[in-house]
Amino acid sequence: METSGCDRILVVDDAGDNRILLQKILTRQCFEVYCCADGNSAIAALPSFKPDLILLDVVMEEMDGFETCAQIKANPKYEDIPVIFVTAADERHHISKGFRAGAVDYITKPINATEVLARVSCHLKLSHQTRQLKEAATNFETILKGITVPIFTVSPSGEFQFINPACENILGYSLAHLKQHTFFDLLSSPYKEQIQQSFGQHSRFSSLKEYGRPHEIKWQPPDGSQSALEVSICPVSLDQTYFVVSIHDITSQKNREQVLEQQAMMDALTRLPNRRMLFEFLTQELAHQQRHPRPLLVMFCDIDYFKKYNDHYGHLDGDQTLKKVGEALQQCVRKKDDIVARYGGEEFVIVITGVAQEIAEKISQNTIDQVAALDIPHTASSVATHVTLSAGAIWLPSASNQTSHSLLEHADKVLYQAKESGRNQLCFEQVTSFSKAAG
Ligand SMILES: [Mg+2]
Image 1 (spheres, rainbow, N blue to C red):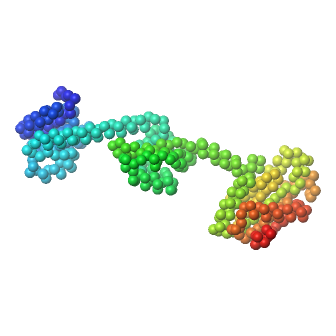
Image 2: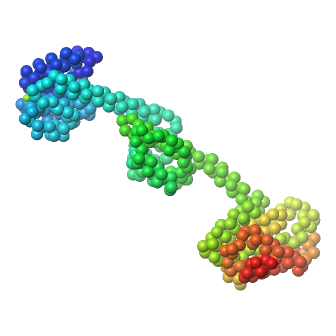
Image 3: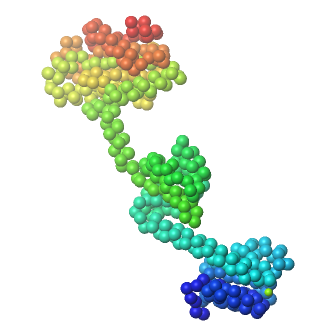
């Protein structure tokens, strides 16, 4: 069977007259035509003739058109070849059965040349376009597989369709595993809802703009680690609409940022929260107090005669003492809800939440006692032979109408009283009406 560059049409009909007529109509239009008188020889001709389209008679002896069509469509190699049924006008009940068997159209006898050519041309054109789209999709997938940028594609309903090896490495999961979830499960609100809505409304003609903004997500690979990923979404319309999601692993960048953030919040010498962290803590606590007022203890501490200590023992010993005092103070608070911060120099601030006044007073006194119990020699001190603290503590039943600044300012004033009264002591004040006490 020689084939030319023309489209090839396989004509299957058990009536010789019909075969001759169809062949005549089609060859006149430069189609390459091959005729078979029954279904079996038509199926046998497929591998060598490789038709672009099949005209198939419905009523034939041995194997009818439906069965022939079903067998052709059952083979993946030939499933895309368009089949047009040729049926008598009084056999219209065959039409729906023909479509179910996989036909794309039908022509009624008696055969009309114009109709045959119109339908054949139309379906060849459609078939070529479909093939081109499929080839483009295959090429597209090949490109995605090859590139080193981690990429996956999802359907408009969020179903994972394809994942390239680079992306599999980062996510740590295969496509089969990801298919148990949707892409939307990876996202957090409100971005999740926005994307879900945009995907649902997306058509082949939608603009690309709405997906251009990269979005950060948290990801947990199977090894239990935590990753930070940045996802960018781009819609692609080929034989259907896909969303190509490219991934950028920003875990190290995020970790570096976190370390810097922690360093910025921490005092390098004592490893205690610094002043910035203290203000952050107080801001959060005061916001919490707006909804759930609770008692608050704010305590300002100062190491007595610390300048003299440094002058006498040197700054290296001074640093060691600051560390020891910081550790001792930290022993006096609960880790989670309270804070011991190095305010600056030899000043520390302790904030304790939700404690009754008597307990607050005991804790305050205990911190002073604990530092004294360290028994760090301080011969330059005028109040003791060891390192001691002066402390000003204020306790409020509720701090809902305070600011961080007003609380610290007041505690500092009480500390000043402790110093004025001879140092190495606690001044404790119960603040019931802040404005009155502050005044
Ligand atoms: Mg027939």
